[in-house]
Length: 244
Ligand code: BV8
Ligand code: ZN
Image (cartoon, rainbow, N blue to C red):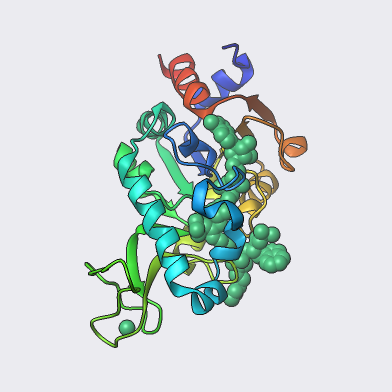
């Protein structure tokens, strides 16, 4: 893979970097992206129509089951070489911050420390009414489990459309993005806000922006380097080219 020599030498000297990942980095692990057509039972639904508080209020069992299926799939797959390359990169760059939109927990399973999860984590469950986390729950398959503290319905601890991102995660992401010398946008279509604004914040802060994606996105015209291809192939090649 021919990687730009300028980027390789830039990364060798880099002290502060940030990376934002999207569903594309989990695609090679077997987790469908949002842009992929939903498979099977879910073919007739759009994620934007299920990942909302309104959808949960209207059809709690349908939404709960959709996440139960996605949680089971996340548990059944493994991190891919792209996840592991980001662990290696964090060991080489003094100040490296990994920010993800993904809720599958694969970065942590690959060994990335301190992942900033902008949109929560599908493995965590909390009460829709009182917000109390639920360490365990007993789904009988017929009804949505309820909160031990208040009897409210349990929900996945993810950020739905129309919901606020966790303020501390968003603040940490903005701070790392403003401070970095190199910003990676990896496997994301860059359509969902406010995550999609991070690359522009990095650019305004004078960082070099590197995009890794199978295809161009709305961000591509703005970036300094666009590495077209699979993140599971490009990231390991980049780590080898820069740090051996
Ligand atoms: C908020 C968790 C306000 C849940 C997610 C107009 C109308 C309505 C709303 C809005 C609007 N305009 C803006 C909004 C706000 C909305 C938004 O941005 N909507 C979009 C659709 C326009 N944003 C929100 O609602 C956010 N909250 O704004 O709150 C507020 C403020 C104060 C007080 C109260 C409220 C919340 C957004 C978070 C939503 N939750 N996920 C769940 O997972 O179920 S978003 C979810 O979708 C993901 O987390 C991710 O962020 C997004 C999918 O994006 P990607 O990760 O990029 O994945 P995608 O499939 O799109 O693309 C994959 C890419 O990978 C592709 O480019 C592909 O080419 C590439 N690829 C594929 N394979 C590979 C690859 N690349 C490399 N290698 C490969 N192998
Ligand atoms: Zn409760």
